[in-house]
Length: 150
Image (cartoon, rainbow, N blue to C red; front, top):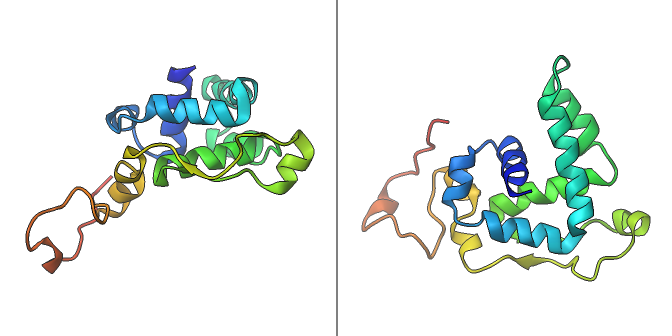
């Protein structure tokens, strides 16, 4: 499941599996998602992604939009996975999701661990360092951040 989770995460974040593993948070994020939505729902999401990934023909982007992000059950979970990687926070699933699929005891907003803030992909994406952590060096504030080429 971990390999599928990282492959899906790489596809939806735009970062390589190598970069995601480099955060040191893959196990923690996988455990967090599994704890909140359950292995069954997470498995459904990853299975849907695997089918799209292996399919030939129609564009993956279109299928991802329809079959994952447009899916009433899988879409909110997939969007939360993206948020998790970028900001390190699991946000509660929307109320309409809860009404349709049932309440989850663990569906609360939380930061996965103390490294989630500093390792959030948002900092790499905007070419900045997390405030209060990973200091870039004395005087670095005198220059505007440089957005890295992807």
